[in-house]
Length: 180
Image (cartoon, rainbow, N blue to C red; front, side, top):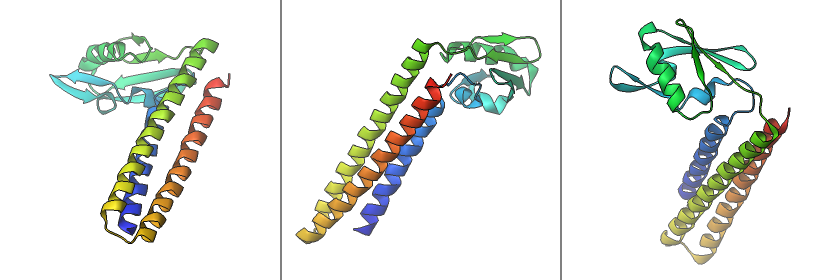
């Protein structure tokens, strides 16, 4: 039964990590290279992650600078950023691509908070699914009834712990987004 509990905790940790990655993609009005993690560039017919084709730096608080290793891919990088729907317009000066991060309006901040809460809720659903699987595995393990009860209680303690972590992370992100 300890294997089931350990495996369940590992799955729950993975759900939290996935949520944290998704939360970093919600921008908070400051330049963060992580918002470009999902951008794929068509480089000689192959979709390649942007960070493999260029160095991304933050010269100012509201600016990202993308300097490609190969200048011939400036156009495809610019096109990929434009098509990626991250809400930023690339400025190509022939050497580097500059992304200016606009200041967030109150309405935009609220939309991002809603988005963060949705991500948190999706994580909680994933955690509940992990709990359901663990409880089913415990029942199938043909253990005495009292051990089944103990196992299910341990799984419930795990989900309580991880739900609390989700709530804390979402609260942190909300505070970050609403801070002007």
